Length: 520
Image 1 (cartoon, one colour):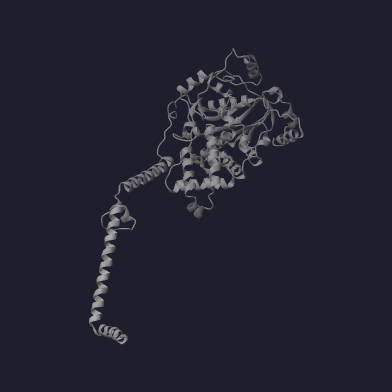
Image 2: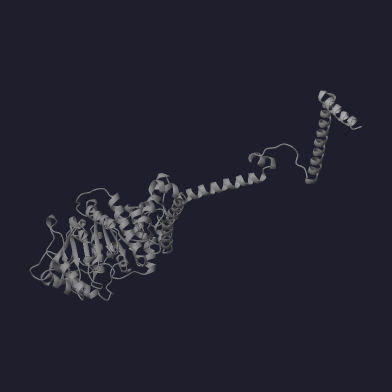
């Protein structure tokens, strides 16, 4: 097949007309949709193979574990070997052969691949609020915590950093409320509980260092083929909000960090978002607007985004309109809602006079789809019933031992396995608290060791003199009282003597004597 396009299968009469995705329009995004069991996973697998073969790195999430087979070639012993060969002949896939592809395994929990981490600061308050399902008031407090950490130069790297800065915000709520608005203890407690739940679910492994370098997702093998980066998502799907938030963060980081490249001859990276409906379920408008902005602008960074979901209606209309390349597997129409969704899906395709698109979407079999790829000048191609080409790599998962071997021999082996815990908000705030506690203990010890005189001095009751026992004090008090009484008596006697010897005294004496003599 041509070096500027990807062969996806055969369409038209007898499936003989090649259906090809032009690489120059591959960054115009795409959609792979269809009911469970209709062949979406195989389509995702053959697209990943084809992009890799053209030197385009790929990132995809492996929800069911089946896509790990990309690391191994298919086998003639496989039960579908004859069916695959027959299909390849039918659609004119003349150079069909089994092959493996350069695969790098990743895992948020570090169990089935290289650990994938980001920092709390890089995730940001909007996505963390989405991850924790916070209310508007709680999200506001989270923004305050991020602002305080930034102003005080404290890095937010892992969950314990975020938990510790929230404690500090609570302790200083009164001062912060005057500047930023109300900081309620109940809201802080609710955020802390959500963080605890996330930690118990293993989400703490997602935050920390070394953080993922986006350049490691955009590498090529020595033979020029692009790396197929596979994120193990079978366990991650147990926390669907964590899954969706992480992939949205990754998409946002690509948008923020990559330079503008305009319209390249082929994408720099193709990003497959499986179970895309999880991204939009109960999402606030601000988040949906962010996804729409990223989807609209990231193509100029050379990144193609392909959403994989059961029903096109799972994707908001504004975003759906930006997905130029379509592979629509069968949709079932058992209910009125299903029939409405089927009709809406059919209306997004360019009509083909040979068949009714709505009927085709309902009738296509497993491994068959209605496809439409962008043509010259980015015009949507006419819808075609297409028989999807067979995969070259192994259909189905590899063993745990084989996976471990691929991880050990990966060019990134050892780079992310050991977590680094450098000084950040947690260590800084704990250091301050420990220093304050040490200072308080030292002051208390000095207080206890201080003399009674020093304590009394500091209490503003300074005095001099000896401290004596209780009985001695009473004797001294008695002596002082006796001395005071003696001094008082002597003073009265002296005064009387003086008065009696003076004029007044003589008058008194004469009066007394006169009275006495008159009485005789």
